[in-house]
Every structure is written in C-alpha cells, then in structure tokens.
Length: 114
Image (cartoon, rainbow, N blue to C red):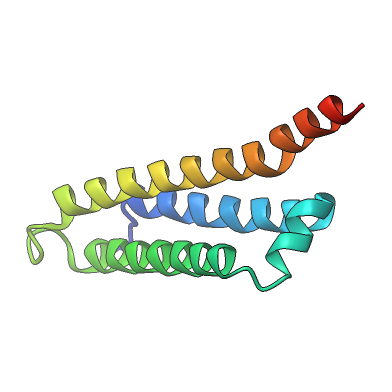
C-alpha cells in the first residue's frame, strides 16, 4: 500500500502554512494589526479560529480520502475539490482584506493626515 496524498491535501496544507506565516508576519511587523488582535477583538479571534478549524477539517478529510481512496469514498474527488476551492477563496479573501485594512488603509489615513 503506497501512501500517496491527493493534490488537494497539498494545496490546503500550503494555504494553512501560508496563513499561519502571514498571521505571524502581520503580528510581528504591523503595530495596528498587533494592537487590534491582542485587544481581544472578538471578530479577529473568531475569524482566526474558524479559519484554522476549517483548514484542519479539509486537510484531515483530504488525508482520509488519500488513504482510503475514492473507490471507498466516492464523494472524495468532487467534494475535496469544492472544499479546496473554497479554502483558496477564503485564504485569498482573508489575506487581501487584512492587507487592505491594516496596510493600505493605514497608509492612506497617514497620507491624508499630513
């Protein structure tokens, strides 16, 4: 039995790792982001937790499909691609919305105040 992993698993794993790195980067290098996240803002905490949970569920399902195969779980092929697409959309939306909120918008506000 060879243990090959579906491409969806690699895509989700990559998104998961990039999301964690992005959050660490924003935490270390963006003062406004760090202040808002660590002020116990419920919105940020909930979004962060939901993103991690969803990514972990999809990654676990993809690994299960990889191990058991689509002949045991016929829904694996279509369902994992749908979930993988949703994960990528969610990842892109989160990164761009946070970059806009904490980097671009902040620079615009600083330029307008000068």
